Picture 1 (tube, rainbow, N blue to C red):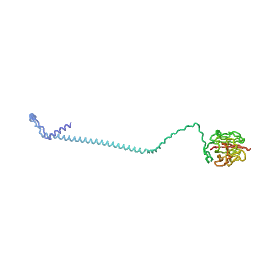
Picture 2: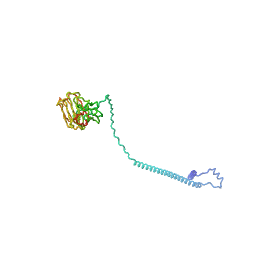
Picture 3: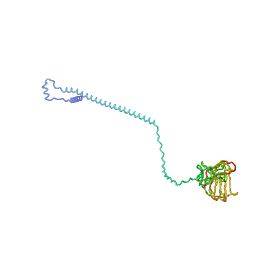
Picture 4: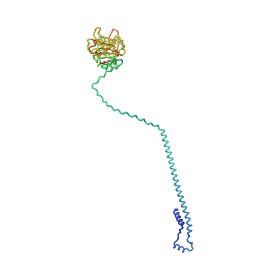
Length: 369
């Protein structure tokens, strides 16, 4: 309503300012004159101008009011914007504080966390070696015989290794327990030497890698002959020792003829007789007479292990103790005529005195070509 009144006032004022008046029509004037001859004349134009002044003031007020309203609206808009900016600033401060707190927490966590060391690079793998396909050999239908022990086995100096006799071709290492191996030995079960005393299989035992033959106080003792290496020429070696024996018991290592010899051939390559401090070598080449044998003697402690050997060739016969030559005979007439084999014996030679039990032990016995 205010706006409508302001508009009307503005219109009236405009008309007054231009000097325009409202001139009545002839008919209206006549009518007015006839009715009111004594009444006031028509209002002059100056009066109309005076009436227009209040309308001009109203317009100014209206304009002022509008300007005030405009300024108020502008101020309100500014205030609204300022409030919005303040709120935005407050939000930004809050966000900045939150980010700062998060950064502080992350820094603290990073400081507390243990350092992680990157693992060292693994060394380059070696190229794979292609697998070798192995084909197992077929088992033989007949079990092979065990190979004889090498010549260097055992203790002490050996003629075989010193002189290079080569591989063992036969023998016995006595690496078993019980009685002597009957596939290798014929154990005597008969009367003793020269028909005195007895040779009993019970006198023999094998244990701890050693063969032992024992002779008792009554003259019961033992002996055995090899079933292997029946040959003419060759080399034999035996590792032997005795206890503190009675002089009536003679340990002897012999090569004995495979068949009856017309010359009573016999090679005793180690024999200790009544003199227990000596070991003798005997080569028997005749059955009787003063020149039926040759021999040698060497002082030896038979209670210790020693290696006794004989080498028989077409040119002669040689004896060794611990690899050292102790006997030789190169006379062709003294050569045995046929093949021979090994025997191990503890013979009893009673002299009428009391006999003390005695022993002979053999560690191994080996044959070479």
